[in-house]
Image 1 (cartoon, one colour):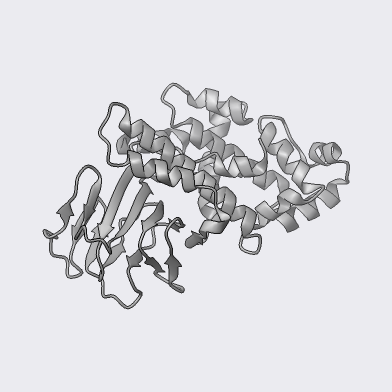
Image 2: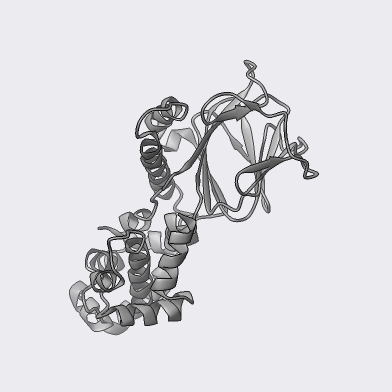
Length: 316
């Protein structure tokens, strides 16, 4: 597994929130549902995404926006349009003053809006509703808002497929939407990383380094190996001091700290699966026992694997 694949391996939608929105101007929707990650594909019309802090970004048909939560953001036909709808966790829709919203039209399965006029804006909206569905490493790598221009992305076919699937009601429909949402997110982010080197995280830029790139691949391909700085330096053919300095400079943290984060991210993903025991997860990612994994989890994440699994069960 290369380091980019490792970064993008986290998305695992489970019962994904998927919605088609049809809105005629003027319209403005403030989203404060605290979802850890939201993705919006514009299929018709024009929209602006307005982050809590920073400049508004325009979205054109065929383009995709990704918003990292839990900070709120606003979608509107124009940055100057006053907020008309507020989306809360649930989701629950209210007016800006908090009154329950009754004049939104139910337009069919997973479809809502205020009108079906020919000048309406049509958006596909997907949300990862629990932090456990997205790796912490990926969330840390993303800006609060990004917009991928149509000319730089390869998700057009997926957007068309999602448009067809989102309003269907067939056996297995939720599983189909979950996987399509994952594919849309991963495809969009892969294109964004490839075309946005100036904004990409430090660790991503390290992938092209002739020394640190191979070192990252070793850690990702075999996280359970008993790595030390010395053994990793030997694998890539440089001194321990050079590896430690160059790795920290390009990746942003020392090699063994990076490995610890990677192992704990992998363990957290494994613990989503009911059949995987804590002992098994520990050994798969390089810890000698469940106790050793628990110690690392408590030190780095503030809670134990058992507590993480209990939270996952309580939200499912």
